Length: 327
Ligand SMILES: [Zn+2]
Ligand SMILES: [Zn+2]
Image (cartoon, rainbow, N blue to C red; front, side, top):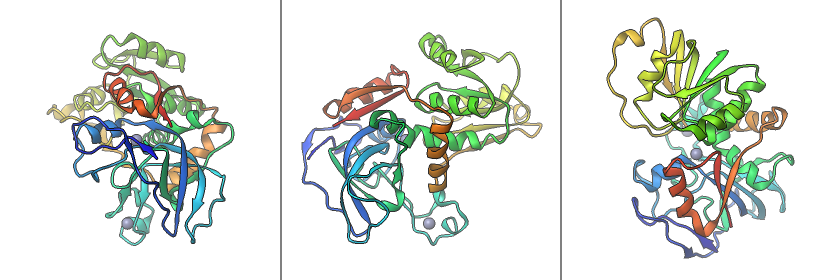
């Protein structure tokens, strides 16, 4: 099969012909139809996340068709369409798994990081972490739901019942979260890199009531801020924009260092928290909600062989919506 593996961090992906993987007893062999490119892939390729499996086939926003099953796999039939997310395996017995926090499992393994992912024509996945995809969505359109959508949804949920949400970094996750927020009757403001007019127009087209530079104060205080850009300096900026008792939720897996800030911007019961990974419950809830909420994704497609170009475009912030690789 064709694949685009990473052989060493801080190097480009290298096209390769690899043997087809075989499904283990509880695994599915999946013909990849589309795989979205996540900022986390960029952090892995750029060496900002330690300890990827090497060589590694990245990619954890996979949509594909079941072509073979392990002897114990029973949740899906040959020919079914499934989605595969970042969470690829959990132990089921640690103190986190036992209380519904499998996203924090001590031994969790992640797709496209410790498990080969979807930058390939074929992949295998544990069937317990595969999900049916609503027929409303085409393969390419569905791919960004599997991480940008799921993690974005979990991030929004951590904002509680905030009515006015500020979204920092208007990329793949933000454009999905914005649609869910509006469906839930929330208002949102969008904060972008200073002067990024195209991202600001994109946010406005999705219903942002106000758009501006991430350094600018909003016209009214936020009930909660969601940060999707990997920029630590946004944390104090977002705290300063958030009302008393509000929360700043960091949705990314990696962020540059957070600069020190005066205690008075945290004071008055403001909170800062992060979101890590996802649970299967998040996936089930969000994948049911997305078609009801009328969530549509905006995508830019690339042939699998041009995975490096997709990563470069994401690195440069040149994308509106999500990059998706098609084998
Ligand atoms: Zn566990
Ligand atoms: Zn991701």
